[in-house]
Image 1 (tube, rainbow, N blue to C red):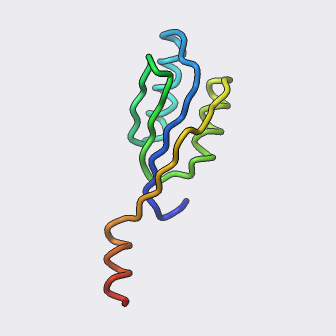
Image 2 (tube, rainbow, N blue to C red):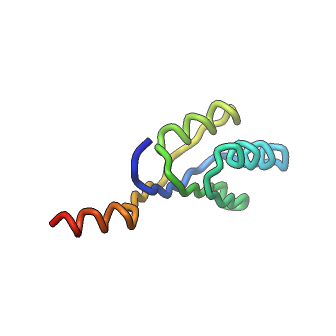
Length: 87
């Protein structure tokens, strides 16, 4: 796992309530913060994660195509403080 906090936006087809429930259950098992936008068919996931691993896991569980739209990596506050004090 990387030491960075990562937020990513995925697009996948969520066309029925069963698909929504399966996606929600998969994300809850990953224990990451998530937001599912059913109308826009988008999912936002934030936490200490590797974006490719999240996409692969959702793809395997849902058996649907997953597209990564956006990835934002943010350094932790502790890491930033360590870099500042070491300079």
